[in-house]
Image (tube, rainbow, N blue to C red):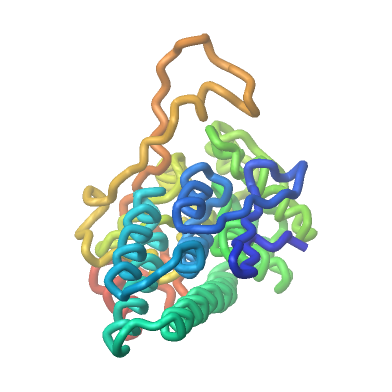
Length: 355
């Protein structure tokens, strides 16, 4: 079993510290929005859906951590909390979706109330806790549905490659991309799964291969620069990845290195699938050029487990994500529908539930 990723017991949110996996299982405790945002920013947790769930819990935590005497002050605190949470990771849309949804819920509640009182303030906290719980339930349900729809796309004796970690550790459910793989494995379709190590943060090496092993899925770890060779020689016949933000035309931002895998898959004639829930789709962005790419610390490139692996003082680039053009994506698997072919019209239909 994968350890619980988030455990909310007022007034504390326990967050599984994924920086220590797979060797140690420990939790970081957040008691307000700022501490929740810090955990997101510092990679205590990661994965777009999980980030969104954690962000939602940051709102009731914030109200429980403060004394309130007016609706004006309460909403001001929540708006500030939303800004702090959104600033933690700029690429993952689920973070913005959850923060906006929680803030809208609070504003709607306050608008319907009369004068402020401690009782109604307590009711608002409970409303926000229920909404955060709903976002968590929806994530679990979406993961299960994506697993079912994605597994149908894979044939018998599938040899699949995945990148980064889009498994249970990235969600509150079975995962997105890895959820597809585990569901397909349960149906007897997976012969072998390859996980790329995913430099520089090694999510594939530390997390994905660990999940695949625990799920009893025949699997092997590869370094990122082995992918082309294995596509040519190891019978890989599907690539399944997750996503952090998808533009209206289907261009998809995911962990750095995804774009290269899509190019390689195209050359080798291998289907390239993206599994992501509809809150990952940003209809306000026409194409991938509008997606903000997070630049992370160069020390995450030059250090591994606290040990310097490059010349001291060297400069290093670390864009955390890249954008895969829609034309390289065979299909996008959402909880509502499989988007195929990937284009603006079909993306819009999926978001509106018209597919």
